[in-house]
Image (tube, rainbow, N blue to C red):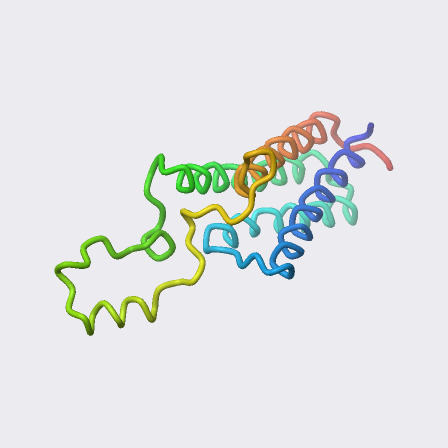
Length: 158
């Protein structure tokens, strides 16, 4: 397979992940802050795929595409660790309030009113025992490999 085709395949893979994420959201699975953050590198990868299609600059842009999905993979691994409890997540989406006893009722009520509805440390959907963040990490790793193959293949015609 040519470098151009591999790059377009990788970009299409990111587009499919974005469409799936939006589909889950439309089905009622509201995303947490980390979920949304993981989408942006895939948006970048799709844009890079479009630039490759328009310019034919496979090698340099494929390296950027690989970096973009590697960032998505890193964020997804971080999110998976938060879900499993290996490390704490951002306070704004992982509970944030740790000592209720020291808070006044007024402060607690104010904190609860501003708390996000969707928590980053709770898994809302699993497939084969893995969360959406875990699947994003696995699929992003595969996309990074495809971007890497595209970079190695260099400039080729479709």
